[in-house]
Image 1 (tube, helix red, strand yellow):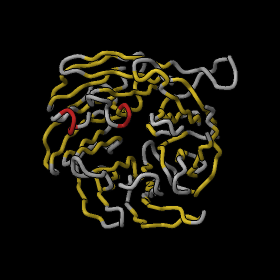
Image 2: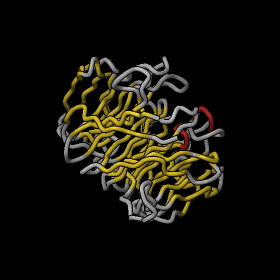
Image 3: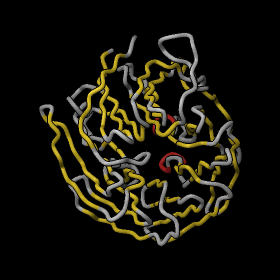
Length: 332
């Protein structure tokens, strides 16, 4: 089944950092969703589409650039609370725009990456990792090399918090409190982390990583060691047998774009590429490239969603320099 996607530009925003766009989940399937995005001007805005027009839900201003935007909520509930990092501060908003959190982390570095898991807040500067529980400082770690991303395995499946740091020295550092439980060596420096199938898979222990030279890989993280499942090398295109070097991976998501009941892997790259991969043989083998398109600027966020019209699956993407959001409508 061929996947055909058509580009639609929704709106313009300010310059965006990686992972500063999120789609608010709905409890009802196939209904239109709201999109929230933060930019370097310190503006956070939430919008939805109605009859082809952008309808703004709320707009708020911070003093400094927004460097990361994440969704959170109580464990086991819909993650519809909005959290953003700006300077060394973390703010929280409801989807109606009410601010319920203003937390100064007192970090000496600007927050570059962040993850929310229930009452646990994980933030990283370039080298410092801090873990806060209910806004109380719990754990701290100073990395030997630059931290590019942070994530945790799902607590509801693992039954305890498992933070993972993606570091420039080609290591995934699996944390236990303030110590490194073990490290996983990768073929290239990891730049982006994403849970497999967005939930870690059947046991919650599978993690996707994207690298600076365009690779995407899957690892299974055990209690004391990891198993490499596959690595998808960059370079194969859909339209020809030639190969070309792809850009570094900036963002990833899973969404069923083909309607076959299996979530597809969506990858955004710093060379402007947006790609969709399908898992033809399950998660035991590397996915197959089904679609790719090129933008004229770096892709900072991608997410599968239903935004423009109810029942129509799309890829919502933010880009860096042309300041626009794009929707790729699926026609299979």
